[in-house]
Length: 253
Image (cartoon, rainbow, N blue to C red; front, side, top):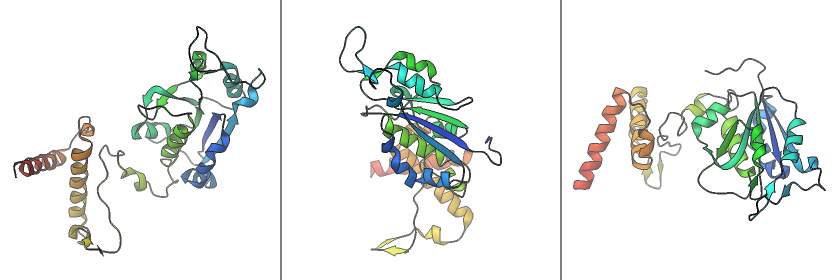
């Protein structure tokens, strides 16, 4: 259930060594959210909070390669932020994998703080501030900024009124648990490729069924793992059985 009320606004604070990297956000859906008064976003360069000659990193105790982010600059930058009960996100390759369901979860929070790391890793004590450790996937980026931008964009677009119509995101791939069905726009015939006749029919129920069938088909072909957790309706189960039969016949042919 959405907990938004009139006058509700999300507040996002980002702790980073490179605030300038977030400039593209101002030209995206995030910028529109700010213009509509639905989002307040602040960037904090935690190098400015470093006590030790503005050094934010140091060698790890016990030896080892690389440098670790020191706790002090992060803690002091965090303490300087006006906040109530924020959800604090640490961008970490070892964290929980980010997905659409996670974006929907974060979009209901009033306060989000993102901590973007660099270097080899973090002083473990930084994690005492954190509520969520999140990763984009099984690979390593130079820093957390790109991951934070991706998560913020995916989250902010889900706030009601940001996109204009709630249906704008409820039909997205993954929002329903399935991949999105194929879509077409003008012209009807482009270089011999024509729009499926059913979409030109004006028959809303048939169009709904076609879209559901195509969504199931795409998910079955490209991301069958999604179907393992998806609760099929009786209608969807019948469609999926038909899709499997078709695929089986194609293999035999």
